[in-house]
Length: 278
Image (tube, rainbow, N blue to C red; front, side, top):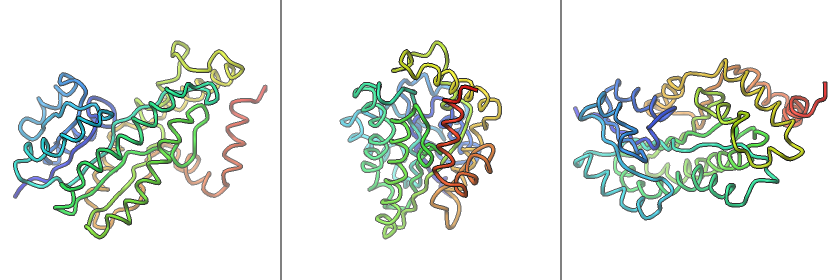
């Protein structure tokens, strides 16, 4: 029996690496994109012939046009069952002081790149009636302050996935979003006293300090990336996958509570956390 296949973008570390390792252990054929070949050495050693690395800058449109032929060659005629759009990152900023270039770069990496890769690989996914999995974020549903560009991009992922979910259903393609909360290697590690942050020297400086303190506390209970990888597996194997899988510590306070109490309550909680003088 031919092993099922998955292409995961950004497998050098974090959620991407954990997901690649998890699927290799499950016997899948895994293709992973990296920006440098040495970044996936650990996966090549572990996966052997079951793993192939693809050198790819996900923001390079010309390179993306070459991707379908490369994937077909690596799979040697077998179908691509799953595309997992994982590559992305976040850099906090005071939104009104963030450069247009910085904002554009975040949107390019976190939203336009997944769209471009999905568009390019659609013909390969159509053949088996495959699945598309986007690694979104709770920030795509409940925006994070000082992460305007990232939140906007992840909100865009929710919209993109929603459109594709209906459009591609006639081809048997299922589209799913994984929405992680605090995960090790996630946004909390990006905010620190030595991190160059646009607008950190503005009137928002004290709030940045409180945000860093809050994220430091969140990091203590952050989930292992393996939990996200397990959610990806569920999205890939469930007969009727959900539209969105939420993976977060403090499920009640971080997800269910905001759903029940509403946006006004959530924003008030952030204002108290960041701007209270107590």
